[in-house]
Length: 458
Image (tube, rainbow, N blue to C red; front, side):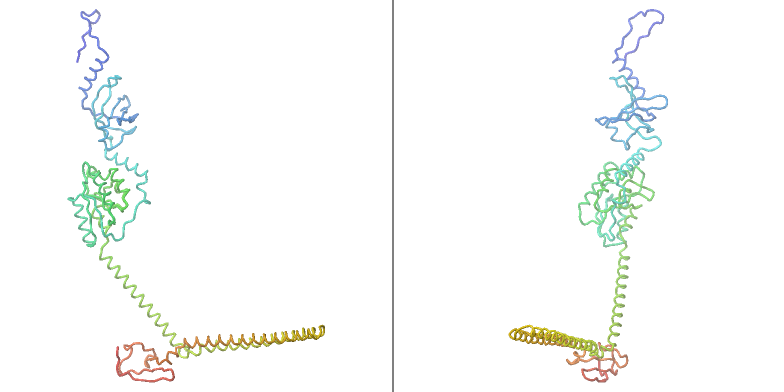
């Protein structure tokens, strides 16, 4: 660094003073600042934050008395867990230098965190707000879990306590349930990408009913993989229902908000997903017993109805069924015949009057024609009456035959019989209903017999 020559005060210097160029003085000032403030922590409020197309960010850090320009290059910005905004109170680390092209002094920022709120917590709140606005937390988009899952996919560390706890609970609750583990890092660099990849890979299978994604408890840094956007979007895009099981009961992650169901612990996730097989068997047994009891009740009800019908008089004397219809048919036939007789008489009277008028008004030849027509009409009328009467008789005979075919007595005429217990009066349909020595009554087509049971044969 070039040193400035001292000036004499009040008289002309003995030697010619050194004259700096703008570049030289700026370069020297830069060297002084960088040497004095190579690693500096600075506190202030962000203002005029903007991001260039290159990805570098520029802003002003100020307090109530002064301000300084700052540059956050893309490489350092990529490692930050939150996005700075105007108005943020921050604590940044960097070096003070001079931008020689403009002569501005500025801070090259290498790290930054919110003052009063950790960088991870700030990033958590920002991502949570972003995904909530996109609707990833909406209840309407969440899927319901299957009642009885037979195959469960799990994305977690293969060596952690979480997988051991879940397998123990699943085996205890339902040994028939199988598990497919996708091993993934759940902490550290690259863990979020592995978890997201596991969710996507298991979604390619058709035999998995539900997914459990999680790990045991830890600090916010340990659980951070489940706060990454890649994991949140993989859960949201899953076609298989996802249960988030991250940490202990007090721990919440972004994955918990996006998942279809949040379990406080991995063990609790297994409890929620897998019902107890014994409970299912007991429920099925209970429903089966209920169904059998209902069927027995229905059978008894139908049996009582059948007994009631058998005891009715028309079953004992089925010909009574025909009595009333036959009587009504007779009445109808009588009314029909009376009606036809009256109709014939009226028509005959009308015809006679017409013939008489024609006879008086017409020559003899016409009278003969009319007489012939009268005879033909009368003959047709008589044939029609006979046809109607024959048709009615045939219908009556058919009805009587149908009723007779339905009569239980016809069965008896074919050689069958009805056996009833004289003790209970009920029909005997099985050898188990009577014992040796019991008296039974056997009804035949004509008459009935009383008999004593010598032997029952099934």
